[in-house]
Length: 345
Image (tube, rainbow, N blue to C red; front, side, top):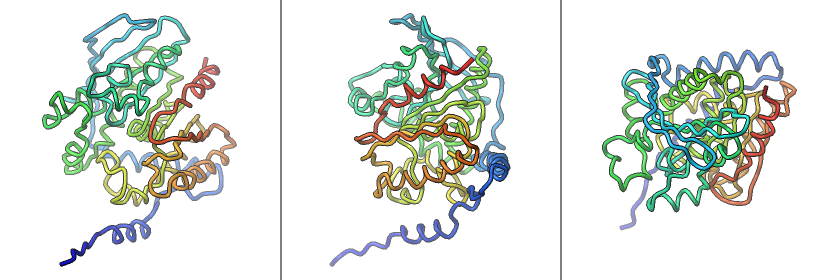
């Protein structure tokens, strides 16, 4: 007997289309955009669950310090909320202008380790495939790099993923299930942690010029952080700028991509519009699987909407770089950050 399958995909697509971007930007003037940005940040912070999160003293502790080839690597642990601890590496170059950059990891990097070049037999193939060691590359270009573990990854994996053989895994789905049941989301927790990391960066004396970059899930967090926190002056997003409709039951299904009611509110282009007119680089691979079945067309639709917002503010600070290849960090961020930092005070 032939098996029939009764998927809910078409049902969800219909609901998606009926409720799409209720709070997206559709204005035609600078004034409308500015008012929308202010209002939408408030809406999105609540959507992420920020009203249920409360910061505490950062209580930073340096637990390791090592002099390496041309830079120092410190491991620091900060407390972002009561009982919520974020370990991070701080890479400080011996020379250079020492502009701060937050480098955010995605999946399959063993959290922060892959980005700073700490590689094991279990991680080396993925780190090479994704070109993951961009934190190490940045410190060698003279930046002070802050490289945290996001909740659910690296040293912040939950018990089910804490085996030595599970370093490529994350606890995103487990944490998001618990968070959503309490009116929050793992994405909200990640963004909140990154905002607290900016607080720490500022306490170290860096105030005006802070950049953020990330690949894949790190691109997702860079996008949201930069959209919601104007202290980020320059953002480089690699491997994550695609329309959300193409992810419905098809693609990019990790829990860190999902927030209660988000599809009714905005699309990725609106996050880009919240960053305008600040510096924003989007890096896309021609065959990146996260772009969905429609490939770059799914990216271009979002870029066009975001570029319109930049145009309303008479800004050319949005750059879209396209590379032949799949899901990986291509490195356009290096020159982009160098060009931005050359104009920093």
